[in-house]
Every structure is written in structure tokens, then in C-alpha cells.
Image (tube, rainbow, N blue to C red; front, top):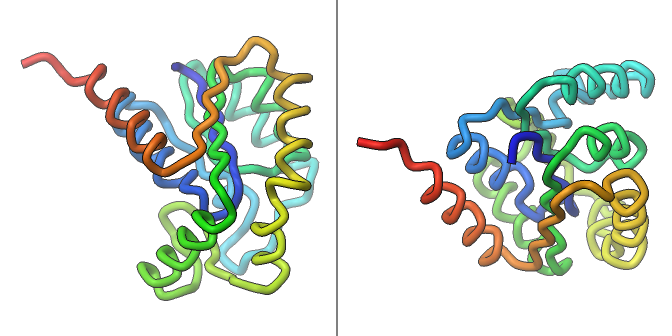
Length: 173
């Protein structure tokens, strides 16, 4: 696990698992929301966003979390591991509610997420498994046949993965 792409629906826990894996593996972490949006939540032009990802994946070791399916092939081509958080919509909505409560809205400077809950975002979460998941799975098959794909269907599975990685990478006394 040297080059890890973490993908999944909003609220699935991508940022959390990314932080935990980065700490355990002592790997550089990039939150794509921080790359894509500026402080006023304005998006980067698509070409610049893709170019920045090309630079990021050129590194020897990295963890990159975020969806952005249009540029997912860049990450898939360079990744050795893909962690796909495929949680039910209810779990993702609960994750969004917890994040909203914890940060009280606004942009989180640590991971770049802007806590903007709209009906469109809620519909996106409710429809993710039907509309986005097949597209993401197809991109993984097409651009990442070489990757180790870890599909996690619950927060419990995500916690088990991070615990296993943490336990395997304990520094020696």
C-alpha cells in the first residue's frame, strides 16, 4: 500500500479513513477538495485540476481522497490500492449530519470540505449507489485492473481496515 486512492459517496468517511491511513503509513495525504476549491469555494479549471493530479500521482507514496470521477483515471493508473467506501445512503447522510454538527458548517480548512448541504447534495447521496457506483466501478475495471480493490460496505469494515493497518505498522520499541 504505497499509492492509495480513496473514493466513495459524500459522507462515507473518505477524509477520516484517509487521515488514519496516512498517519499509520506515514504517507503524504491529499484531500482533493483542497486542490479543487479555493477559500471562496471556487473550482479550479478542469485542465489545471487534472495537471495537479498528474503531479501528485508521480510521487512514490501518496494517499489521495476524493471522488471527482472525471479525473479518477489519473489516480487509478498510478495507484496500487483503491479503497472504495460503498456505504448505504443512510450511513452517508448520518456522516454528513455528524460532520455538520462537529464543524458547525462552513469550510473545513484541514480537508477542504465545504459543509454545504443542499437538496441536490442529499439527492446525490440518495442516488449514489444507483447512478454513480456503476460508473465508478466501470472506471476502476477499465483504468485500474492492476489495483488491489478494497470495497468497504460499512463503517465497521473501515474501522477494521484502519486498525489492521495501524497494528501492522507499529514502530518497533
